[in-house]
Length: 167
View 1 (cartoon, rainbow, N blue to C red):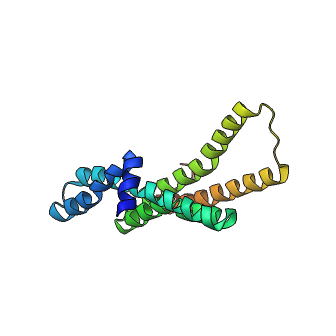
View 2 (tube, rainbow, N blue to C red; view 1 turned 90 degrees about the vertical axis):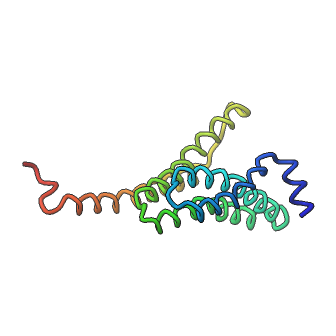
View 3 (cartoon, rainbow, N blue to C red; view 1 turned 180 degrees about the vertical axis):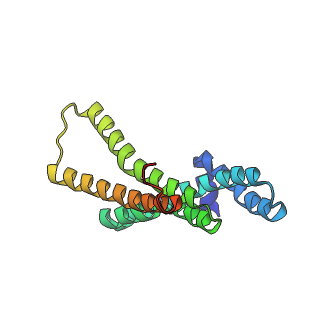
């Protein structure tokens, strides 16, 4: 308990941990206040994500780069996974699709662009491994196809027979 209090003093965002029991209590007391539940849940999940990130970094420091990288890759998206599972249980399939698409764009394009920008600020000439770049581009293409094909099939099925024919 003493370590937790020291960590809360060091990281002010962890003061939001008070919203975890508040969000749980608000869900039990009033089922109809959806906006309030959403805001309280967002405020509650922020410090939990910070604690999860800190825990994976601590384990990574003790276990080495390979295990630490695997833990960061796996548990780094745990918050998104929990939200996606909750949305699936609530029947919010469009939200889950948008969340997955946003995670892919964020993890691939945004991080790549940020790496180029920050690397360019420090090193004006950068070198890249062509094989690794082609491999990553291929993985991004496969992820795009994996999202597009089910969406296209679902859209075609929703149009019904003759939905794509020209009138």
